Each structure stands twice: as C-alpha cells, then as structure tokens.
Image (cartoon, rainbow, N blue to C red; front, side):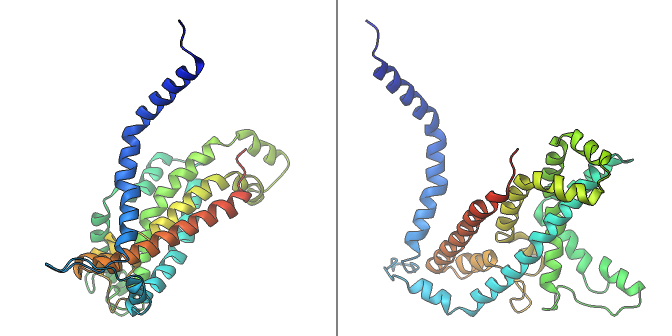
Length: 297
C-alpha cells in the first residue's frame, strides 16, 4: 500500500526541521536567548555577594538618563559615526574605482589597500599608537620637520577622537573596497563602451550608470559601517582608554566599563538594550527607505 500524500509531506517537513535543528539551537542559544536575558536583567538590580538581584523596574534606565558619561559617550559616538561612515565608504569607492582600471601594479595596489583589513585590531591600534606618540612618533617627526610645535595628539581632548576616527577609517576602507570592487567587476562592459561612443564623461558615466547600479552594494556597506561605528572598543582600549576626560568614550566602551570594570550588570544590560534598539531601528530605516532607491537589475 502506498503512503498517503499527507504522510509524505509530513516526512519531508520533519526531515527539513531536523536538518535545521543544529543551526536553530545555536541561533536560539547564542543570539535570541542572550537578547531576551539581557532585556530581563535590565529590570533587575546587580547582585552583590549574598544579596540576590531584585526587581527595580525602570530604575536602571533612569540612572542612564541622569548619567553624564553616558550622554558624553552618545555625543562622541554620533560624531564618530558621522565621520567614519561617509569617509570610509567614500574612500572605499574611490579606491575600488581606481584599482578596477587597467594600471601597472594593480595587484600590488589592491593588496596594499586590503592589508589593513586583515591585520588584527590590537596590532593596528599599537601601530597607530606609535604614530601618535609625542616627541618621537612618526606624526611628530613629520610635523617637527615642518617646523610645527610638538603635540600630544591622543592626550588632547580636541584631537583625541579625531585621531581614533582616522584609525577606524584606515582600517575599514579597504574592507569596504573589496565589496565595491566585486560589484564593479560584475557590471556589463558594454555599458562603458556605449557611454564612450556617446561621448559621456567619466563623471557622467559614474553618476548616471555606475552609482545607481552600485546601490545594492552601498546599502550593504552602509549597514555594516553603521554597525561598526557603534561596536568599536578594541582601538579605544589600546589608544586612549576613553580619555582624556571621556573625550573618546564611545557607547560600547562605556558599556564595557560599566559591566566589567564597575561590575554593574543591571545598568550594563539597560545600556545594551538601548544600543540594540537603536541599531535595529537604524537598520530597519535603511532597509525600508534606502531599498526604494536600490536597483537590483
């Protein structure tokens, strides 16, 4: 007797769920459950010794609103994101357009642009720490040869965050360049030939042909750039440790200090919830607003 169609469909569905089960367990255990647990912890106090955590409601969020260091970190992060996102994306696009052309030593140039991406973040921070070192750092040697006065770049609140921004842009531009370069190489060469026949300039061809076709890649790169702008902590830890006077304290570094230095897990959970909500909101806005301008064909 042949099995009924419903039984065969059920077996296929069961087989599919069994195949998905390992990935589903990992996703729930290491992504969804930690997010839910963090949300729950944000409504409890931090356990101290024998004293268990107690329900405090929105008290941790009230502490966040009254915390001047938190708002300083928000301002720093907004400034950092506003600088690193357009600079890294713009520089990546320029580098991709350049190395996509036929030129001598193109492979070496591509490798040079991509090298900062494969370097560990701690190594990159230590390299730039030497560049910014007062009196004998590379930057000081250059400015000294030009007759400019010595300056403590990372010790001055007016320049410290800008210096960290330069490091982030240098690190991320090569990574984003790879995506733009791959997208440029998928474009039909006949488009460029047709534009040349019509007498279109390179700028006109980029603005009216290449840039619209690169929008899917730009959307992907933009989302990654936003996430990277709010998850930086390694460079801050090595270069400035949030100083001077919290001038380079970003949200994730402030979260690290609250959670692991001051061991206030309840307050740290509240900061985490706010950070996740903000990033998720930005990502949704990017998808629903910018997606209308994306050309996938």
